[in-house]
Length: 159
Image 1 (cartoon, rainbow, N blue to C red):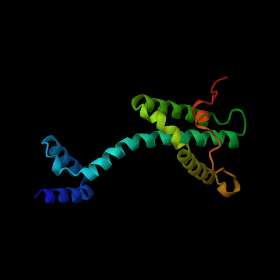
Image 2 (image 1 turned 90 degrees about the vertical axis):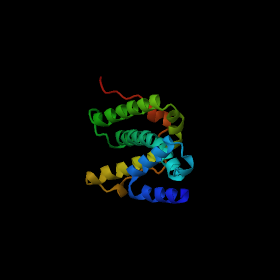
Image 3 (image 1 turned 120 degrees about the vertical axis):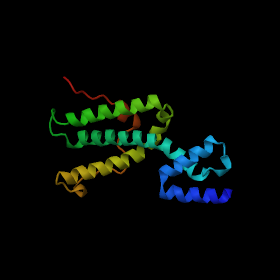
Image 4 (image 1 turned 135 degrees about the vertical axis):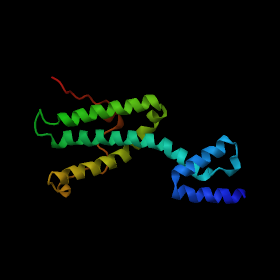
């Protein structure tokens, strides 16, 4: 009977996630630990933590993308204000998540490469959207910025 319940839960995980959650919560409340779908439950718990890490990586990618655009595509002194605002806003959002989840602060620097890969994709899309051929630009494969620069380089919005 126990094995049958566990197999049904594994199937339910694929077919109706919400019902799977409800049934596992009920089993946990009733302390029927041997019936819980531990394999999928542990995976979901890990995914919950990764969601916040993915968020700060995404904000870091925006910072890197806009730093690169400022350094390589800014036409004059007034241009790039939107990119600067985006950098500052992304830093603020990262710092809010650092306050909520302090362990992210030590993890994010290890994901600079991943953030840069996302930034490259965003730059390529932006170039195409502006009718420019990305192949005509030498976007570096290695991130041209350090984590410290991304998080702390000063930018002026106001004179």
